[in-house]
Length: 183
Length: 205
Image (cartoon, rainbow over all chains, first blue to last red; front, top):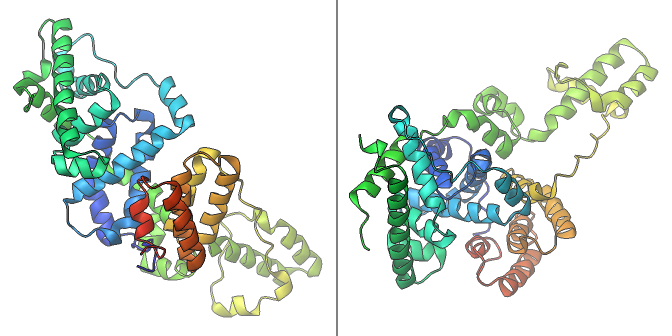
């Protein structure tokens, strides 16, 4: 390849992928723990790279797996930025758990509760949990993306599921057994 | 634990279904501007696109030139000189040249001065803006931004910077430089997440 792959046209495939998978990328980035105030910037970073790398996409994996791989790397870079870290610390919104369940707000609470439970996982567990249980990637895909061995992925995933279930049990105990999204 | 409980699965499914993202339309315009330097409407309209295609960044220069020509038609050389001095602050609403002959007949002495240098982005914006410049195929600008980043934060995101530098050098057809940079990158950052991009570039095997 002699070109850098920067020539993907605006419109056509790129615009179709953008419109079809914008929600997937946006949700994935939120689940990976990017604060609300930074999500839009990170989504844009992802699609700038998608635009550049689209000519390289060979369809060997699902487009969502490919998109998630890019999103995952952008989020990792984003975390490394000291400035972003400072802003994240100042933004305490993600990760908080609702304390007064309100059935009228159940739809939003499910999102808040999920993000709160994910925030209780350590970074490796959260990443593997999001990949396996939310994006529904296979262990081999996760291993390829993270550079971990498949056995390590399985091990992390088991621990992550247990940590998530434990966090859910604690939440349930605090809320007196109420799970508003079940109604 | 191989499977999630029913409650956990229900929570995830409900949250993912109900977590409504904003409309993609809301940020499409900003994305297109970032990738191309053009507004989405101008890019999509074939007539505008044809006019904008050769050099997206030249629009401001043509606007400035049109104003200078108009002033030259009304006044004398002194006004032209004054216009040259003021060309950097020409309002965006100024009329654009309508015929190619207008451009051709413009005296060389009335060429607009180059716009003032773009202010340097904040440190954390240097690499994203270098990415943007790459996407716009403005490889020289990308290289400039990467050099600024290397000067200001040599140890921060060095692998990403080097990988982007390889791509920028490829874009400038500086293949030998790109290969040298790629070798240095691979030696210094053998586990980098950017290896695939470097290998897929002109500096790859």
